[in-house]
Length: 373
Image (tube, rainbow, N blue to C red; front, side, top):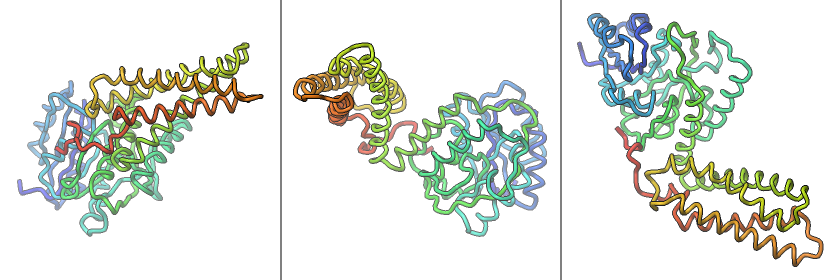
């Protein structure tokens, strides 16, 4: 086999039924080109290995098996890119939802030097889908696209898994952190991609097997976006996340305070006793912080630090509420709440910064799972 110009990377988990249908279509689409197909398999329990062995007799196919797969589909794609020999890298699914006949359209802008990254898009003019999403799925898709806009710009289908880029572009990527299914976002953000082109595709129905897009993967998408925001906006992202957590905790505290005062608790006491509700909401965000930033944590006991900060916040809130209720002639509940909680927020911000929380952008370390393969 001659040195391939194009490497088609196909991540698989139990896709043995689809591969005999996919390979002939890839061959037809890339007729006249030197290419290879890399099947990156994540420990399938079907007969994927046997199917690939048979197909390799007729097609330029290589099977790469990840015995201990990590980071889902994204990890499999990066594994394939590491072993690819082609100058042009294409990623597509094995389930025939991505149309192989559009491979040439995907590669043309790269051949002509018109783009750094080309996406097969369902949502631009000419793009279609075999299956219409329900209203809830459409809303989720629209929200996911809007959340990705600060990272990828005006790209209509940034979650597409059918895309192509130059190998040289991939090799210049840094701190790649694969997570879940949305590897295109990772590459656009962390490789030197300045020109993204979208080409319309018909997104077909799955031929065999089951979709792997689960609720868990949707939450992983949010976590992935959080990492990419940290990478793209290392100073602003921690502040934005602090403000989001603060707003959610204030809402919980305000509801608790209003409920307590409706039950006859005094103004100062209502504000004081409501603060644990705010702490509980903040603790939910802290759980995620400890899980996703575990290798960035400087101090050994993040929950002990969290408890210390929370007690200091509560004490400052209680002191402010007591002082305001005693000093003001006719204090309003909103005034006491806002001033007391604002002081607590200042204490929280100062102590979190002092204890080196939420300042990932200032660290020089690179986490193990962010190393470029």
